[in-house]
Amino acid sequence: MSEPLNVSRREFLSTTAAAGAGALTGTLAVPRGVQAAAWAGGSDSIRVGIVGCGGRGTGAAVQALRADAATQLVAMGDVFQERVDSSLKAIGDELEDDAARKVQASADRRFVGFDSYKRVIDSEIDVVLLTGYPAFRPAHLRYAVEAKKHVFLEKPVAVDGPGIRSVIESARLAKANNTGCLTGFCWRFAPGMREAFAHIHGGGIGDVVSVHTTYHTGTLTRRPRRPEWSDLEFQFRNWWHFTWLGGDHIVEQAVHSVDRLAWAMNDKVPARVTCLGGRAARSGPEHGDVFDHFAAVYEYDDGRRCFHTCRQIDSCPSDNSDYVYGSRGWTLVNGWGPTYISKDSRGETIWKFTGGQNDAGRMYQNEHDELMASIRAGEPINDTERGAHSTLMAIMARMAAYTGQTVSWEQAMNSTQSLVPEPMTWDTPAPPVEVPVPGRTRFF
Ligand SMILES: NC(=O)c1ccc[n+]([C@@H]2O[C@H](COP(=O)([O-])OP(=O)(O)OC[C@H]3O[C@@H](n4cnc5c(N)ncnc54)[C@H](O)[C@@H]3O)[C@@H](O)[C@H]2O)c1
Picture 1 (cartoon, rainbow, N blue to C red):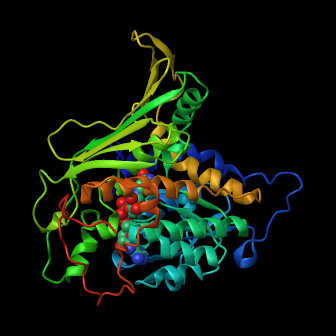
Picture 2 (picture 1 turned 45 degrees about the horizontal axis):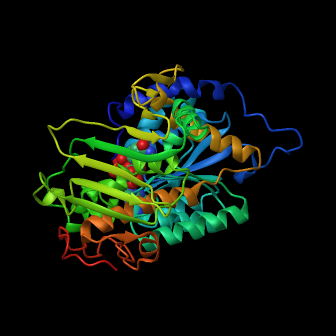
């Protein structure tokens, strides 16, 4: 549900059309010496399946289909029939004249239910887009990797410590199998953002001494209870308000900013985190058990401290920026403008990104262009262990906020707290909803 600030999904579907247009003119070149592979189904088409046909799954499918002239959507799965139907229609509408050739998910390859992920993955596909709720990502990924499929894995990659450990194991297995696994930390694929971080890592502001990233925005949609819904379905329909399903907003949405904090720190993992958080403006059943604000202090073993703050409260100022402080100046990183600018301690501009606009629009297409090209080249991208680390940074801050305790990297990584009930069916009792109370809620 974490639509980016200021850019509607419709807008970025249309803006990415331009970015992907070049890819439609021909199959991506296969480098000299690499044989054109026969893909699943015995053709040279890359066959794609989606698991989780919501807003992001639909957008990712369009981007995957535009990433290579010979990709085809052949299988779709969701727990709700109407999401499969609406996604199929939206993808067809978006692809217009290309839809008949590219959208081949016939009725017998459109699956509904909790086992739909297995049925999609077993449908002679090459690449699966895993875009359901974060709670189920580790299990979906494990099945895909064991079946030797390439994966596009949306963020966050899990909601708890056991999920993170499972994702890291799957990422390593994918590496051993030489299958791709690209994690949806899309800002890492934004051209201007890449230039800004290259400038920072190239010493443009000296040594990085601290980072503060923000994700301050309004609250999220609520879907009032309907009489025909069970408790579990009510939680599914409002998934981003239930920690077991979405991880809470620091994990589900602000993890993008936590990931950029990690990027600025060269992906060094923090030693520990202390985090303040609570609910000031959320109440009522649709708001589930999530907090509405967090303020995290990450400590590194070299003594540096970095900060992340996020808020989902209406009628308060928004900010989704990164402030990276170096020994010779600081950089403002804001992909939405985009604004990438460095100043020295007197406020003089020492560097400025002067490239194109619409960085946010291009990043979604770039992820898929680069994944498909890497698959064609026989050197598939696998950045998922790093994606798991960024997700764990957000999870450990949530754990620290909920419990009121400082949480170390090892404690978070080894946590045995599994939030996701197994097995999951529509008869599984909905997990109890209790808003955590710092100082009282236990860590384990
Ligand atoms: N990278 C980004 O900028 C970005 C933007 C938006 C969303 N996201 C991420 O994408 C994911 C989906 O978000 P969304 O906004 O599309 O939500 P959504 O509710 O629109 O779609 C999720 C879909 O997954 C389905 N689903 C859930 N569990 C499933 C399961 N076990 N098996 C099959 N289908 C299942 C749901 O029924 C729903 O149709 C989330 O993790 C979210 O954080 C990322």
